[in-house]
Length: 212
Image (cartoon, rainbow, N blue to C red; front, side, top):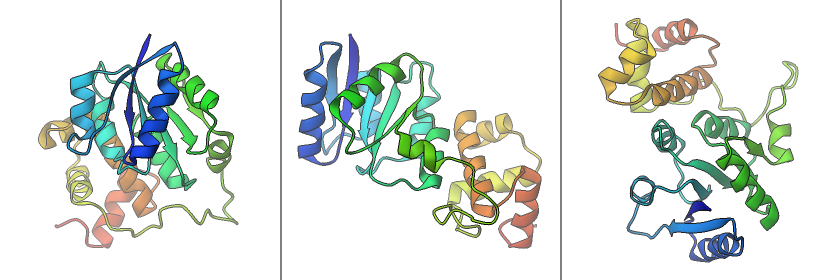
């Protein structure tokens, strides 16, 4: 039996997802979030096989990147309202294996839970279309525009990249996992419109993001 953690800010959404999970004999509800318990605590205390998460409930991709780096981390299916390409990419980079629209049918959600528990990646057809390559003549409007401010942690990572540090060294110096470092590097490249780390560092110096 697959143990499922249900996470949704809305009590109505949470109740609906719990009912969906309980209705399928393949699943057991490992637990559901309450306002006083955060996602990290719930995952670590309940040790579910799969987490079913409402993406509108303050779900943080960076937090999940840290959680998913553990050997016993659960797989995750996230229900989204938005089809922003950058957001979908960020979730996939954080280790999320299942991405569905919030209006997905119960059988689609159930199938996704089984699939990600088996190590597969599942996405709604609409999200696959969003990830399709975009031509240079018609850039995607929903991409994170170059120049979007870096977070404080991303600024730290960029400075360490400028020092020539690799992922492992950055992880040790910041006290995070290498998976989390990779997530931050990917976000930095996206925000600076850079294709490589070297280009990101060069742009960082030009834009005054790195102290000399």
